[in-house]
Length: 270
Image (cartoon, rainbow, N blue to C red; front, side, top):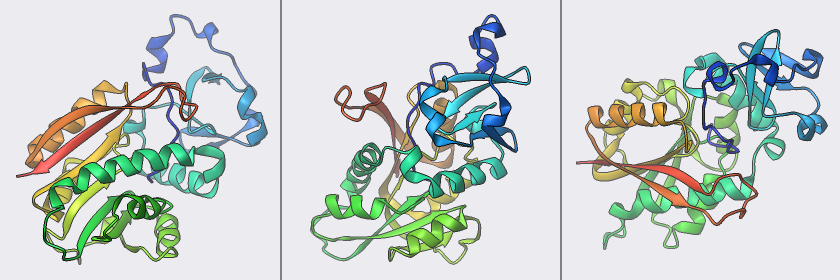
């Protein structure tokens, strides 16, 4: 995981947004490949000609990451669907993601996550990227960590992502089988473009256990998916984090995106 292009998610309930389905164009399904409960654009050159919403077989789908059309909210997708989306976007990274925008966001998350861990102690520290994806966070950490205090460790549910990140020299482990990772192993945790998907309470509790006391986990979420945003905050609080949320303001049109605010959650382990 870990890479995304932002879309306007003002209302993620497709059926309720439109009073009549005839407001949504019906498209030729042959332009797409059906995978689980979503569609993928077959020819990327068609991207600029496809609308935000489409209708196929009487169902409404919303565009996501330029090449996907989803029937459900991100948080409602099955693990199988999430994994397939992650692997497809990993293989087509340059086509589906604004790397400059993603690097900017990841740098900001890293900055905020390491703040409590920076002190006079010059010993090496570890920072965990939850949902490391292609491993571009390594470049971001090098930009932020001028004193080279932090060693980056990455985890993911995608074996393809782990292989790519490991190829860059990043220490990685498979999230679903990381029992060898000891509690309180990390001085900071960050997660970019991951918590919009379904993250269970047990996963959040596990992240809490991996983080050292008085340290911080920082993540970002879609600006307008308020339901999932509040749900994640409740899970974080229940797991024992002290949380605060804020908006990261971005210069308008700096990255060619439609919005200029990013939702950030800072979760501190007390």
